Image 1 (spheres, rainbow, N blue to C red):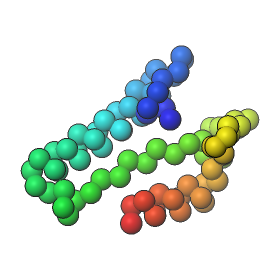
Image 2 (tube, helix red, strand yellow; image 1 turned 135 degrees about the vertical axis):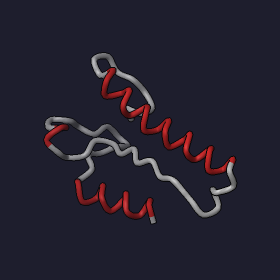
Image 3 (tube, rainbow, N blue to C red; image 1 turned 120 degrees about the vertical axis):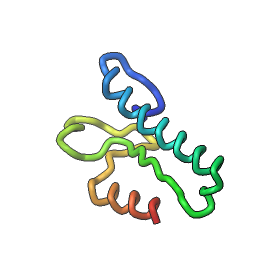
Length: 81
């Protein structure tokens, strides 16, 4: 979410997330332009809140819910595969 929208007081955090999304998009376009996109793919992981110490006290809002670390890892592996 932080890589797609901003929030007051989170400029540095949002900038790093925007950077990850922008880097993924730029690399993907360069691969396509140079004819490599048939065999080299990119994946940018943008999870919602993960149930770690960083998000203590956070609540999910429908349709989102707090992801467990295991569920997050399982989904990332599935996306990469």
